[in-house]
Amino acid sequence: MDKGRLRTAAPSENGWVVNEWVKQAILLYFGIQQMQTWDLAPFEFYDKMLLKKNYKELGVRAVPHAVARYGAFLGKNVVLMPSYVNIGAYVDEGTMIDTWATVGSCAQIGKGVHLSGGVGIGGVLEPLQATPVIIEDGCFIGSRCIVVEGVVVEKEAVLGANVVLTQSTKIIDVSGDAPIEMKGRVPARSVVIPGSYTKKFPAGEFGVGCALIIGKRKPSTDLKTSLNDALRDFNVSV
Image (tube, rainbow, N blue to C red; front, top):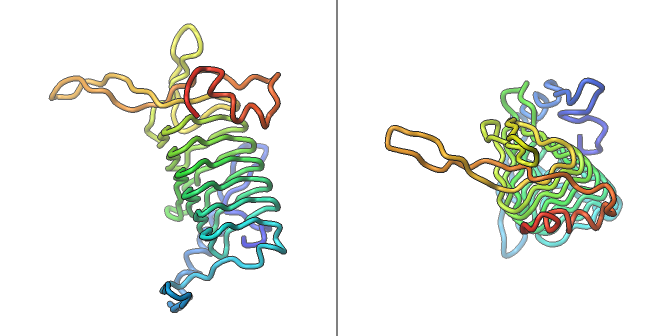
């Protein structure tokens, strides 16, 4: 896993496949590792998991205080601002993990992804069959977004700031004549912003959070430029 030869989940012709035995290996590894103290004056740490090293040889830029655990894969030209990447995660080439962003255990992050400041990508080890969060190639995840519970964000999608996605979050495509609801997956090239809908409770009607698909990224726009401009095309904030 540390070298990227094994993955906790991998793409296939039939979609993403979870390698349960690899996740089991992580749990067994935790069980046999001994706790130890690291002194990095004036800091002290007490843990059982080693950290990644040799960033220069890996072709990874790691800004203080970026932390990646041993057993996480980082592809070439990955940039780690002060951030955290947990064991079992896979971060592919050219991806930016911005300040205070976290990539949870076993999460799969594609090529050329931008995780903006404060993004939280959830992790999962148990149950073994559970699919981790998957962010596919070319996605832009805006500031303070949260993606958890095995949600899949397909290629080149854009999430605006503060979008929260869980398996129970309604994802509503409002770009056509009638709303289309889905859960657990953001279609490729979608532009998504936070929204709300009204739900009845015993105490009355209240707004419940959801995610709104307001359109698609324009194919005529340069990919790098559109990462920054896609949301502005729809007059919403990055």
